[in-house]
Image 1 (cartoon, one colour):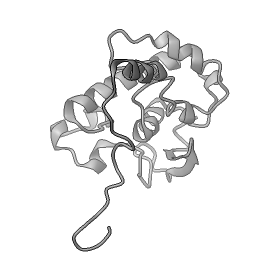
Image 2 (tube, rainbow, N blue to C red):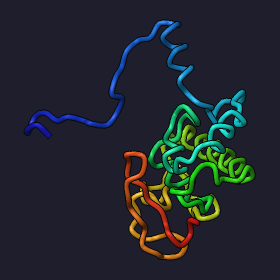
Image 3 (tube, rainbow, N blue to C red):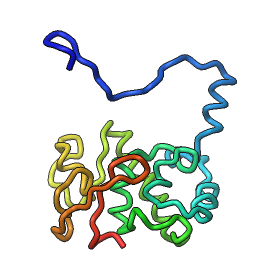
Length: 171
């Protein structure tokens, strides 16, 4: 807030510009596989993840590996899969990656459809997705206690962003 009449919104793009075809292609070349695209190649993402010792919580923020996962999605995806965000990518099993890819694709499609991040499983919802309040749409992000076991949610920095996880449910 600058004063009574003016404010600054720090959310949103850090840079907006119109790109020509060459610039657009350069930008696209920097991006990883997009789980929303039918022509995505999950194998390409897997090959990068299985070789890295970086924590999965950091890997999922790397847009050059998988495009579209931000801070909220990474916390929620790893929670839903029961994966410790500090586990090295190289320790992820192929079957876990396949599950991660499918879950990510599904969650991003829901987010696109409803224009909001919704990660709570459908069987836990008693009203239409479009009517969920923010605290009803998420399971671990910015929560104090785990939705599954009641354990205090761990809040820490990982990949230069705040991470949320349950020590008991995420191994």
